[in-house]
Amino acid sequence: MRRALNILSIGGSDPSSGAGVQGDIRVLSSLGAHCATAITAITAQGTSSYSATHPLPARAIRDQVSSVLDDMDPDAIKVGMLHTAAAVRAVASAIRGTRAPVVVDPVLRSTTGGTLMRASALPAFRSEMLPLADALTPNLEEAEAVSGRRGPDAAARAILGMGCSAVV
Image 1: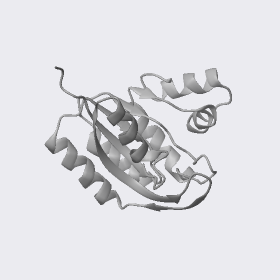
Image 2: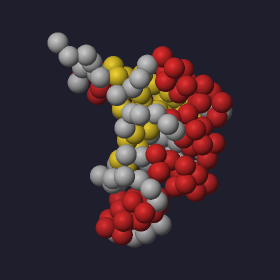
Image 3: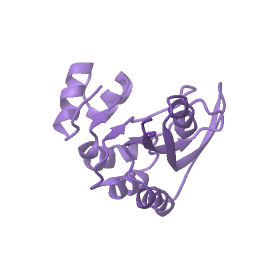
Image 4: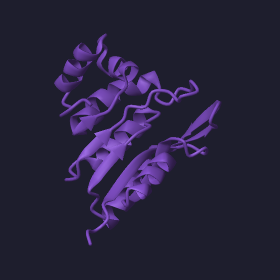
């Protein structure tokens, strides 16, 4: 019998469990993987509405990630919601140097329209997070916002030029 994969999911908390780390826990558990988590922000949202985002302090984020990394060697790291530049820098500093592949989903807004990444976080995201990403999984809106380019091909080329290994 094979050992279950250990995945570290870093991102926002969605109380409806439709997305965020709760969604990752649900999906990864159904696949037989263990999902450790680090929360970057707490959202107040449901399946049809969004009320607010409450970002956690950078130190709280860094402490959570460091605690997990001190305890286990994850097989992969998935980074989702990073609401502030401070959150981007905290996560980047905590995961820099790990051997696990890093998959980044640049979550800009909730399905119901709430802002999940402030525009002021994009410069730090580009310079700090993209070079650590083995794969970036943006939708078109996210790819264009991250890259500053229009269209999927131009956006993907620009993102690759910022140090990301692959754009999916």
